[in-house]
Length: 151
Image 1 (tube, rainbow, N blue to C red):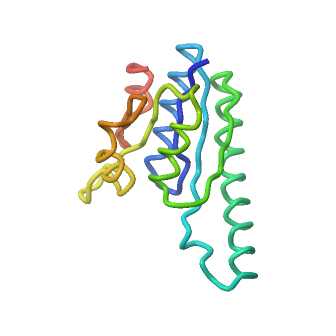
Image 2: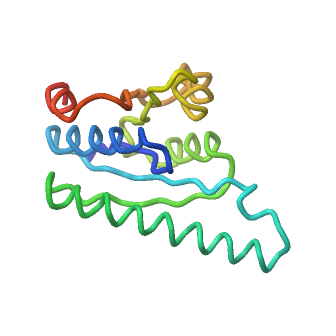
């Protein structure tokens, strides 16, 4: 089964990327793999504090994932999977794509403000030509109705 890999982070545009991935998976008989990356600077402190911060980050990710997973199951009959990795976000996302041959599409949400699409997309575009899967960028301000129409 082809999976749509979508990034879970604290950005507003993450919501549209999740919606797109779930709708496309439902419409094509695919699955959804949600990845969240804990950057190293989040826990580069004293050993005990770093471990506590890592655990808190994982708990926060798991709580956000549960909200999206319930929505995907209830609304789109998709049971997503969660992968949590630690490291530099772009490196870890690329590693996940290379490590999992079932991933068919990488889905990212683009910010809609004047600062640009966001740091993840800006960095990922540099690797787009060598990605082993297509990259889908979903505008963060696309309406639900428009998302439904394009999926």
